[in-house]
Amino acid sequence: MLRTTTHGPITRIHLTRTILGRPIYSVSAYLIDGLLIDCGPPRVAPELIAWCRQHRIQQVVTTHHHEDHSGGAGPLRRALGLPVLAPAAAVQVLASFPRLEPYRWIVWGQPQAVLAQPLAETVETAHHRFRVIPTPGHCPDHICLYEPQQGWLFAGDLFIHEQARYMRADEDLATLVRSLRQVLALGPDLLICSHAGLIDDACGAIERKIIYWETRGVQARILQRSGLSVRAITKRLLGDEGFLTLFSAGHISKINLIRSLLSHPSPQQGKDPGDR
Ligand SMILES: [Zn+2]
Image (tube, protein in one colour):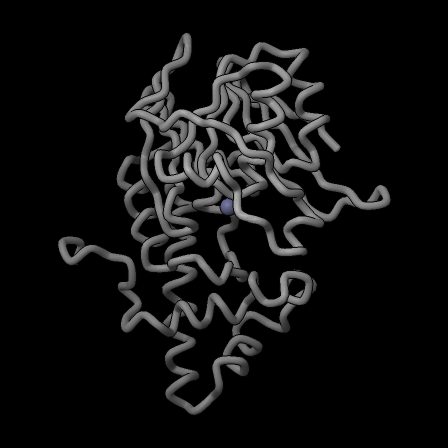
């Protein structure tokens, strides 16, 4: 299912995977000045291609290799001949995408191979120049696109939610927080997230996200010192695990977040020594 909303010159493309007509997962791509930023999962690619045929698209950038952001790239390239740009570290993955776990295959679909060009330091469109900001943590090849004249930060999956309670098993929390601090230092005005949408108070939202995790980290360590198990701490601070945990066989879970928070020795996690 595809629908769009417009926010000035930015078009948000809401891409929703449905099973038997019921929405089970949604992610957004964005169109700005002929540049398509991310392109949804393979299972929604036919709808995205049909939509793109009606609009002026000149190039595709994927913020990272995850299939819900890059899965439309192969079909778009084949159908419309669009150039695809990807973080250098993602190019090899996109050329030969590893076989997905069953839950990812069911929800998003197996990506087709695509030959992407590695991103340079900037991406140019007719009216904008975007800086490519490496922001690892969610995954090693993640980047954001920053347009300094407008203060736009296209953040891919760097932000997701101000109070994110789930974490993938392969995410690196300390690196993720470092990346959040790095984009915070740019002073963006508008945060454009693949899940949370457009957030006007970009810096405030990023600061609150960092503080939320730091606070949870302090609370988790206090509970650990009182003798609670990691599982009990997770339940106390974040509530019961949800359907996502069961469905992903624990790959995406609340306990992953608590384990990550506990594995860092202080609430200053992710800070560079020079920040202190
Ligand atoms: Zn992702």
